[in-house]
Amino acid sequence: MRVIATHTIRRYWKNYPQTEQALKAWLREVEQSDWDSPQAQKKKFGNASILSGKRVVFNINGNKYRLIVDIEYRLKIVFVVWFGSHSEYDLIDSKAVNYVKTNKNR
Image 1 (cartoon, rainbow, N blue to C red):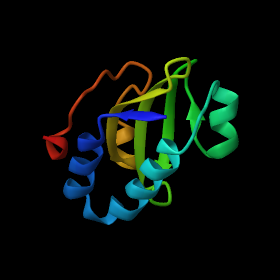
Image 2 (cartoon, rainbow, N blue to C red):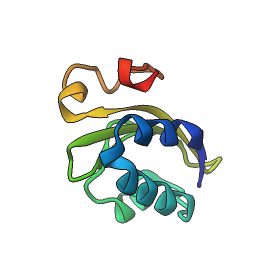
Image 3 (tube, rainbow, N blue to C red):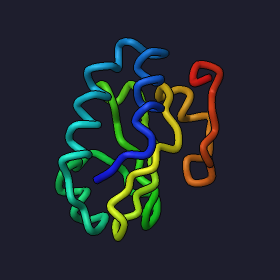
């Protein structure tokens, strides 16, 4: 899978240093994957939540953080939508958020 954009992931781990290793591991796993459906993705990341046909929430760093992505399975592309702490996640509408930045993500 191709992750759009990896520089966003790097910015996240700079803003949340405790997540660096977990985000690097997530990125490596995703880039080495070849999902053609939500079911294939779920086999690799069983604790991820599929919100719609393409919107997925990943638990990062022991579920202390959440990463929302949109996955275009046919094109093999993962678009990073949002990242934040679990408490920040509770304040947003994960199905509607569209590339929103929190103060820490700027």
